[in-house]
Image: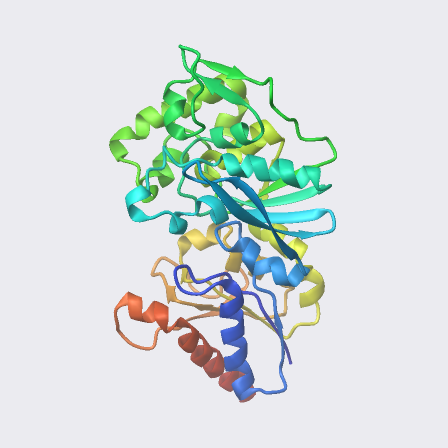
Length: 369
């Protein structure tokens, strides 16, 4: 029996590779001779690059860039020949920012643009960027600054590249800006389709969770729209441009990037179609399976790519009441790993054990055939 185990991470609990390992342990406990192929995945959100780096045999490297508070920090990326992947969350992820410093209009993303220039200098031709899980809401101005653009107020004073400066920009200088060569392809792994501006844009949708006062939403949204009205008007309504607090918009406008489906691109990179062709079972999973998962999140993306006739089972932290009746989207069964009523913090700590036990139970059912 060949079992392809392709889960996403369990947010705030386990990365995708550890989720996959726990499921494998449970399955092998009951069916020792089962072939368990681990293909942890991500849909563009935080943890995507970590999920797929081992599948691609990528080498981790670091480079010094400007950090979220203007200091110099080391940022990691993963490379193999002319391909490189990185996550903006490694620099400005919400989890990396202390609660008392979560001021999304002050956090800088300049280092992302600097990293892209470094990769180009190293001869990289294909750059994949995960933009989920950021603590910033700068509309992409930081990307431009990292590529060499400079911003000035009405008095000719240079402004820091952060969201707060969007209210003061009077002049934009391209004198020191670097352009991305035509043979370099930058792809943004997006897990959301939100535009940059408007009621469903970056600020209104994600601002609150990053610490932005809702009373400022309208002003910030207008400031971002005015900024792109000067530099790239077409970006404001581009689907997915709101990802990463506007980092996706900045990458598209200033680096010529393309927004792609995170899960579809991830599955392409790990050669999922080839790996699953002779599978007997596919196991997917994420921390919470709900109606939002149906909009292109990892478990559904994996299930849709699985050949008909190969059963897909979901093992998740919890299952929402708003899910449609099973089967749906090629998933024939779904299980919550929770074994008892307890505080969420305790469940998060025990996730690996619960995953293993649930996988073992599924394997026992299958062994009865």
